[in-house]
Length: 159
Image (cartoon, rainbow, N blue to C red; front, side):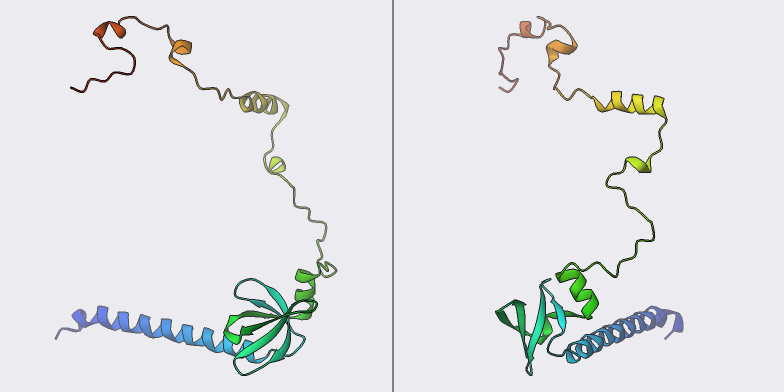
């Protein structure tokens, strides 16, 4: 057999090997992360709920969702184990670690476009677009020729 005809198959098998290898690495990292959980650790479930680990079992985890509210989840349902600073920032709103360094994000997009006063006036005029639907009588006067074909309003040409 010609080696050129085997080349696409070899490339396909190599790509499949690399994809399964990376997937196995991701699964191993996720299992490692779940095994590192300790009671008191903040976690995020795959559903997006933030909770604190209370107890660890073989396949399950007891999570405290709110003070005094506990729920049992499968270990596979833990999406991320968060460090204390990140958990407190997200759940309790502690923003002490965030340094803005003077950068201010505008609330709207008006500062992203630079217009001088004449352009601003033109923009204001364009913003006042008439959104009322125009009828036939607004555009051109009604013609009696259309009704002289023998059709009343609402009738079609179908026979």
